[in-house]
Image (cartoon, rainbow, N blue to C red; front, side, top):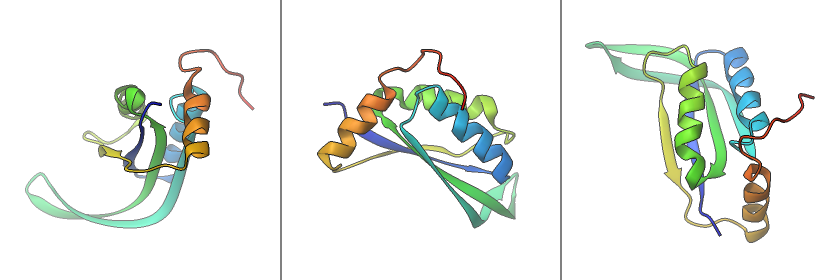
Length: 114
């Protein structure tokens, strides 16, 4: 069975994160997106240290869809250089793994909006 991965990214607002997360799930690029508001980031940007309040997004998908997920994040993101990190998963409960694969097998098909 295909390996599961997490795609980690951050967003500047909850509205932007939710809009992108729902679109990624609707497109069957991911079985699930977790959105975690309230993160504080300190980072280097253009030669100085910045501070920002951000939202973390964890995207649960298959390894073969990681590039397409990254492209979907970039297409919807307002940052010049969004954080997009593919994190391999060492172990997944077999039933959960089957669910991830089943929910992403329809990648590319049109799905109705709820």
